[in-house]
Image (cartoon, rainbow, N blue to C red; front, side, top):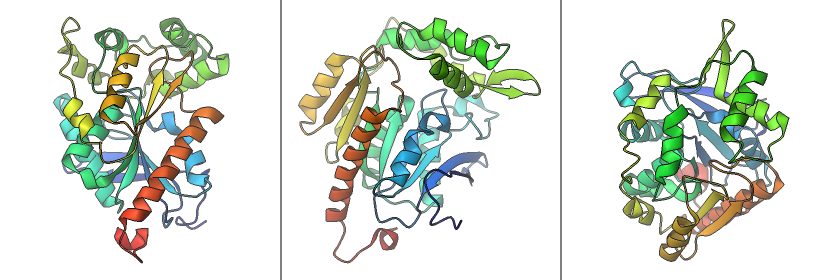
Length: 313
């Protein structure tokens, strides 16, 4: 099936070369020539495009149909690992995002930023505001709670290798059951498959374990600098915040403060889930689809008369 008419259920793997020569993996869904606003999915610190494998095809297939891409940041998933681990920082990763958008000919898009991907989305709103047509901040806000950082610091890059995916699922259940008390065995198994891969019979993380260095300098006794100025850069576009009710990264108080600064902001809380809520299930997918449709309407009004999306990009 030609790439520009292929349905969302059949993802395509693309590779884009970053400015320093590393190959960045992109998973693409949907119709490239769609007139709707495209969607860009940015995973969390030690996460990959697999986190969007349910949501992305649903958004691509619609209705309406649209182009959706998800990006493996350097050192994650199928993207190259960086020989210099100091490059695992948001400045370099933001540059990678812009490189991918330029290479794929994407104009303004709705960004779904999951955890660290939400930080990149806010930074993009500062550095390249015309590229952001809307933002979904997935369990991430301008204030990051120290308790959650301490939890991440305790296990990112430090988990023992499981003997099997089933063993990995049980390991993750023991680690995160307090945040996700109602996940099924199948969901824990899926989480394990997103966390490890089989490499010559050994189970290894789906990310470069040297990513842990990004947390080594974090002092959990001192709060991180807030990102209210970066959040305010999104004031001109629609914003949807998705918070897990059990999240230890994004507090309910922070969401309230965000709404005070962005009165038109949408927010939803996912019961019985923590950081980050699963992007699956009819409720959350339909809510995100409705939000993106609202962004479509704003994007269409912003274009000059007679200008199609393909002409705009």
